[in-house]
Amino acid sequence: MTHNILGYILPYMEETEELKLTLQSLGFGEKEAMVYMAILELGKGTVSQISRKAGINRTTGYEVLDSLFNKGVINLSGKEPKSEYSAEPPESLVTHFKREAEVASERIKKAENYIPQLLRVYATQNHPRIKFYEGTEGLKRVYEDTLTSTEPIRAYATVDDMHKALPNYFPEYYKRRAEKNISIRGIIPETPMALERKIFDKEEKREIAFVPAEKYYFSPEINIYDNKVMIASWREKLGIIIESEEIADAMKKIYELAWAEAKRLDKKPE
Image (cartoon, rainbow, N blue to C red; front, side, top):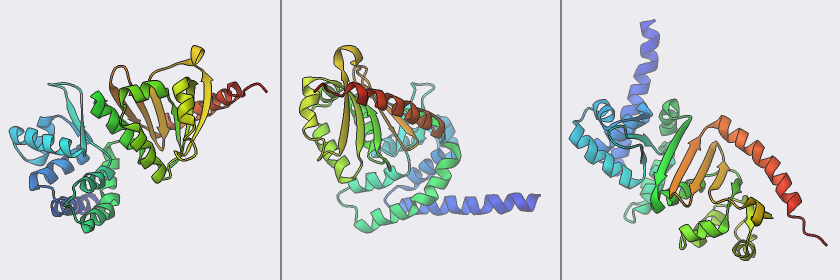
């Protein structure tokens, strides 16, 4: 029995150590690599829990966690003393390195090659889960996550509130989404601004089903893609990502029902 347990644990420990060294070779400091792997293994945790797991003191833990948060590879939810850190999907590492102008292309390729191994560690503790982001930067972060979608996005969206909340963000976002060949279907209240946006549907890979604004106007946006449900609350400046196969699947089915009715309502009289 002991031999069987060791047969599982030892390769896992060796892989974890290898990944720490790989992260350092990609530009992370030694403590950053230790803390990042500790978060992956824990799933989520407080500063004390993560610092203990990484084998560093709490003061250093705060500094390292701040650094990783600024790199966009971890997120923070809740407030002290109950705030907890958890990891963003490992693909965020590649995004981080692409942001660093001085990073050589070999580093980016190396990061991409190690994502499958990181995902194995990440997947053991991190699903399902909910992540919260606050403020305009938080809203941008949840939108950036939609650019990881491997399928067409299903969306409930109000164009007026989106562009009012992030006025200079969306034109560039639409362009990048189209470049990644990620299409979207949107159930959208029919407003003058939404009708203006529809002109760009083809180049922005979007299909719209309009619903009467006087009856169905809503503010928060909901995007459903892969195993995720993203909610952007424009008025409260709050972004939420729910990662759950079960919830995403249910939301997709509900969306298809709503889409069928929205298309019926969108039929204009001859």
